[in-house]
Amino acid sequence: RGKVMILVGGPDWPTSVLTGILRLPYLGMMIGTLPILLPVAFTVVAGGCMLKTDQGGLWVSMGSLFLTLSALSLGGCLILAAIAIENTVAERKAELDVLPDDPDVKKFDDEQTDIQTRTRAAMAWAGLPGYMRALLVVAWLFMYISFMAFAQV
Image 1 (cartoon, rainbow, N blue to C red):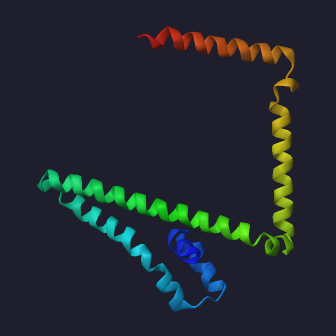
Image 2 (cartoon, rainbow, N blue to C red):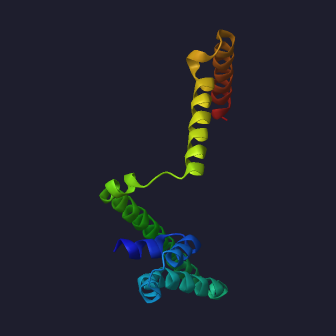
Image 3 (cartoon, rainbow, N blue to C red):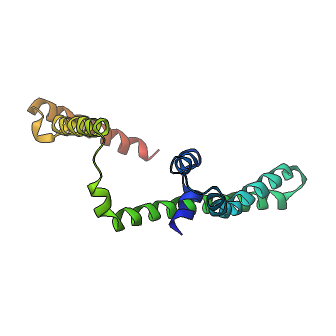
């Protein structure tokens, strides 16, 4: 079930490339991708209805309905794929923890953590000088007063 949700709800190109890199069976991947036909069918019918919108009101409504069904089904597939990935990561945590970190990715992660730490420190209220805090409070007051003054218009 999880493999099908990733094939259907995952991003097209990376998922296809990954199945090729892992040398997964072609026929199994094609069969696993078949459920995408439902959202595709909704999208095709919505497009057909939109082509007929100049003929009357029913086509506009049907186009909107099928476009909504298409969006909901594609969004649902994406959410189910994310749930499948999360469940697999939780179930196989011990296996994943043993894998070594890629040095380049680890370096990038460490740099990002350092940037986030310095950014939080620079933006901390307690770290701001008194004149800067006063300036921010006065600016907030002016914005609030101007909003309240013009909100009644």
